[in-house]
Length: 357
Ligand code: GDP
Image (cartoon, rainbow, N blue to C red; front, top):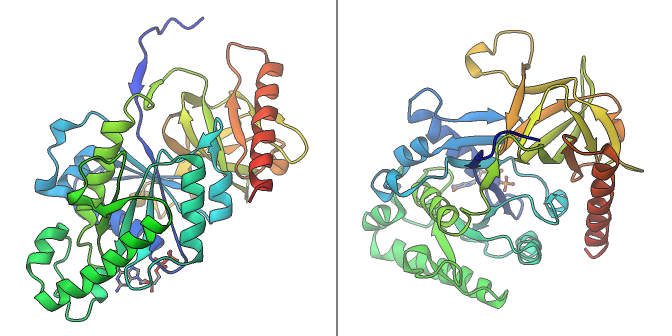
């Protein structure tokens, strides 16, 4: 029925940040956002509901000499705000993981901890490609911080003693990855990222090594995920519920990551619910208000549509029984019953999966 035949476009890969509590997930996301904003240009990042979109230009500005932007045609990276592990394990998209790629944050002094092991299990089970951020390198005794620099440049500024102490910790982590069944190495030594996990030493506080992390994420996505990123930008939207939240003036709303197609205000949608799928109609699509308008009373601004990949708050009647982790599907050009059956089947799959945890 659609007359847009050649609408395939490459969407932004969805990135999740996982790791043991206090190993630095929040700090890393803050650092990435903060450094991106200080790149200066307008549109350096776009804050979505539950996610941050960092365009290729900004990444390339942050990565400096590490990246040649002409090597890439993916539009950037969409970082989802870090959910707890239990919700991460239920964040699925058509049976696979919602995140296309993940960053596993490990405190370089602490090494693997229980939630690191849990995260590894989830990544293995969902077949999600990942890189390891060996965080807090700046806490190495005698460290000479090199704010925002690529890690190898920073290493050149370290004493032999500091570098060898860091190396000891890094090899410990590489050994732990190997015990968990993943062959790994420092990322600049990895030849084949499909066989080996890259370890990126960095600091979420000083930002050294962060350019490297962005470069590796961009490179991995471009090389191994390009085909999966090709979507029909006019197709019926598909997404996953991150969270169900009551919002003054809107009632129950769902914070949703849209990973395929487009969602428009007024669309009929089917959402996974606690007993059965909810069929409803979108009353409003909400995004955070841009920073410069923060003084206005309202937290959100209404948008007419959002295309993948994006985070958005959906307001619609009857969403109070919606479930985190459940699918959201726009009904377009096909019978609603068919979509309801699809959502039911997907929910059954999620339940089997969580029962195994
Ligand atoms: P999360 O629980 O994984 O989100 O961890 P947080 O980001 O909240 O970090 C836990 C603590 O470690 C906070 O006090 C951070 O300031 C600190 N921290 C995180 N990353 C670094 C780092 O790279 N260097 C140093 N020195 N401290 C860090």
